[in-house]
Image 1 (cartoon, rainbow, N blue to C red):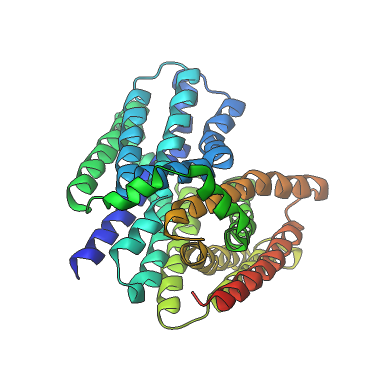
Image 2 (image 1 turned 120 degrees about the vertical axis):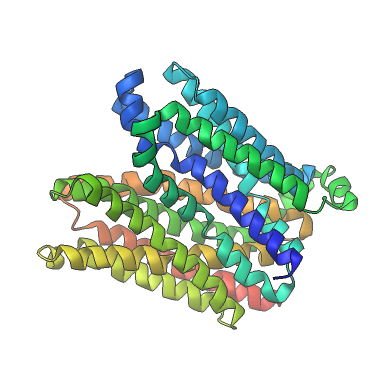
Length: 396
């Protein structure tokens, strides 16, 4: 492995560390409820705080990352995660946890948004689709790992030590990144420090970032709705304990395989439209198998549908990260473009679960969930066609 590609893998690892910070909260909620008297509503606010940061600030944080330099942004983001998580371990009030969780959301964005542009800087063009597919797996990897380790660690050491553990991991990752990743080019930082609003205007006036961002929103909203409600769905079906945790974590983990496969397929010459259509088609079929009334008596067929939905659906984000880099208006707008994609992804995650929950409440069950998911897949496939058409027209 050449040095540049090994450094690019380090960028992916840093993204995984940031994702751990997002995924550390769900397994800690029972302990927080017991020790701090956290209510269900307050738990929901804690879970959503990171997404609120992405929903409201992602494009501006991408703009900031472009301006300060890609490496600097990632290092500072990891340090902010370390600081917020370290202080969080000593928090004694829910209000303090909420504030520190918001800081973690900002740190997460400073790490995640510049990463695709930094990977593009480090690897040869022929290897870029493969590495961006790997990058697309950073979020499900970190989330699944936290879901696996939390139930083992927290009962023994406590939730405070769980926070401190991730503070130490984030700080170590920041030092590792600082030492091994080449410094930001002086010219790039100088250009990035000027014309911020011009870079924002260039990004939001170009069609490419919009098509990619809206497509990502169609994916992320339905993915979080399905995977996020799995514990409730399985608990209602009588699944509990360790099996419930394993099934939920597995549904998140298989998404990694789809992300990595997207990079391999693009590297072998697959058209982005083909991988996106395959991913959305599999999500439509998988969600139908998972929730339609005709599979009600076949629980393992339903779980196979969930795995198809999440695993093959992973082709979508891996491809879209590649498209975001290629359809950015210019080199200095890549992190801003990824920020806009992240913002639409957060919007999808904010809207998708309540819509699915409302449909389920009205129907008295989950059998009409495919109406939402298949609808998202159809719209996503249409947006993917527009993005691919633009890609062909621009020849990038």
